Length: 175
Ligand code: HEC
Ligand code: HEC
Image 1: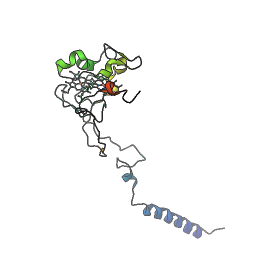
Image 2: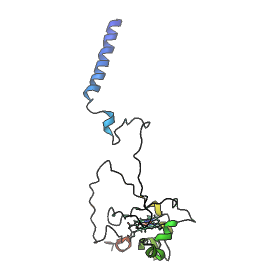
Image 3: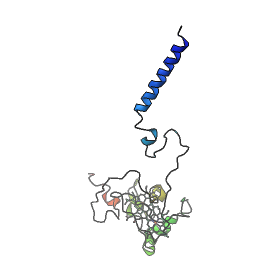
Image 4: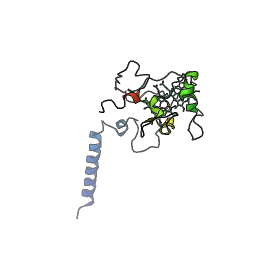
């Protein structure tokens, strides 16, 4: 039988080792581990950075340079009242369809959006596969990134950071 004293001593010793370990690791705190610099075991006090989308109306915004060759361009203008896109209401096409784009100073959808990839045929109207614009094109929020992006895109055409040509280059290298 252990005496009470020995048990208490043992418990204290264990506690000391435990805290000792914690202290020796103490230079790295839980809060410092994640990008969000807060306790990673709870979501209670986590507040995401506020998004800051462009309030500039279409026609008054400045296009964002493409992230890489043939990347889907980000939406630089306000999309208030335009989303979600529904079967009967796609205001994006009201400005970006080829017939109207020039008149409103917008870029028309590129050739790839007027093409059926399955049957390899040119379409008279925007392909249904491209109807839901916001599936690929997102508004750009103006935020300071937590981690700097070191990626350097390389464009093979002079204006590749402002225009796309996917349909012309899609089968490059395919025999
Ligand atoms: C009232 C006309 C109008 C509507 C509606 C509109 N746009 Fe635009 N969009 C423009 C204009 C004009 C520009 C060029 C930038 C500017 O002048 O603000 C533009 C720019 C863009 C660009 C950037 C193209 C580039 O050169 O990088 C994308 C992507 C885009 N719009 C997608 C959309 C999507 C998706 C919708 C629907 C949610 C939409 N637009 C609705 C007029 C419009
Ligand atoms: C499945 C993804 C997808 C959908 C859906 C889509 N796009 Fe795109 N979009 C792209 C990609 C990728 C590019 C760039 C490469 C290309 O296709 O030429 C692009 C390019 C564009 C461009 C730039 C054209 C240029 O000459 O540089 C405009 C404008 C545009 N899209 C508008 C729209 C609109 C408006 C819709 C909805 C009717 C739409 N897109 C739907 C993926 C998509």
